[in-house]
Image 1 (cartoon, rainbow, N blue to C red):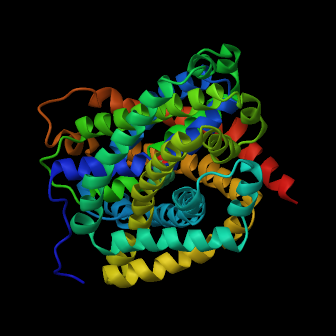
Image 2 (cartoon, helix red, strand yellow; image 1 turned 180 degrees about the horizontal axis):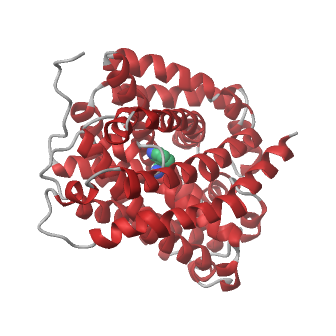
Amino acid sequence: MAGVPREQWTSKRGFVLAAIGSAVGLGNMWRFSYLAAENGGAAFVVLYLVATLIVGLPVLLAELVLGRGSQRSPIQALAHYGGSRWKPLGLIFVATGFLILSYYAVIAGWALRYGLVAIASGFDSDAAAHFGEVASGWDAFGYHVAFMALTVFVVVGGVSRGIERTSMVLMPLLFALVVGLAVYAATLDGASAGYAYYLGTDFSKLLSLNVVKDATGQAFFSLSLGMGAMLTFASYLGRDVDLPRASWIIAGADIAIAFIAGLVVFPMIFALDLSADVGASTVGALFITLPKAFAEMGSVGRGVGILFFAALIVGALTSAISLLEVVVSSAIDRFGWRRRQAGILLGVAITLLGAPSAWSTDILGAVDQVANNILLLGGGLALSIFVGWVMVGPIEEASAGTAGVSWFGSWRNLLRYAVPAFLLFVLVYDAIPSTFRTIANLF
Ligand code: TRP
């Protein structure tokens, strides 16, 4: 639809909140806490911090620069700076968005169900059995459909009237909920055992390649990197925005919420002496152990649990929106579809693609690994090479809207050498082999 001007954010603040909304989600609460539990607590937290600062932040700025500079969604943004031979990479990005949203919405559907059941009747004390009912089969598919419908509704509303407005309301709410829950958790007897587990554990894991890989994968997933989500959001920005500053704020808020979510999850689990359950299962840290804790806390637990799942649903929704927006905006740019048509059609397609993940948590886990370990890390590798070596004038684009040069010199060098070398190493030595092992185990 040539002639229709590109949509724009109404305010800088709206953009920043929407980007934080994309970053903060199930990754910060569900994924971060189970990975930290699996990988030796503090050791994982430290590596995740390092990975976010050294690898995540440069790639985030690279995406913002590509999006704002080109004013296009991923496929055309890459073609704009690199010629049409880079289009396949953009296509992979869009396909990755499809794939991630297909299972992300399944997990969000579990959260939706837990929240609604808690309001109606509280938490089931046999949490493992309850999780078994919720997590797979037609039930899981039904809530997955409901969550996808919510996501489509927001995206169809448009960039400023749908996505921006939703984020302006929901993100402050999410922040207040998570901080409030952490303060409450601190008052529980036995909380200190939870802090000890979370923040003071096995530092020998610092040297484990597997932990390094998980921390790097988590940094990418949590910052929504490696598939053009941040790129797409930045394509609705003007040149008056300070992108390096925005990337610090986004990364800082994302780390802060993940860290605070750990301060909610671990004290609650330890206060109720449920720590033995944590190591046992991966997805269980959140969807089995915590509801068990809420059930044991009686009526207070019900209220606290409702607030916890409200935070989870809010976080998941603002993230799912960004995943769908990549796909929708590409269809608008490429085929000239109307937003409404694109949102509904593609939303239905993604919902159907999620059916296998709704069917089995093993399939869901395998898809999660393929998406993270291979597609996002590989996408980050390609992005850093593209902006480091192929794109002309990235530093000029990054400087527009800033007061002056700060860390851009080292930024480009990071993208050229350190980031690709590190990602390649992680991919070859652990991410790819371990993903193939997971897939083989499915059969
Ligand atoms: N960052 C989100 C989370 O932590 C998930 C997410 C949203 C995402 N958009 C993405 C992950 C794009 C990878 C790529 O829950």
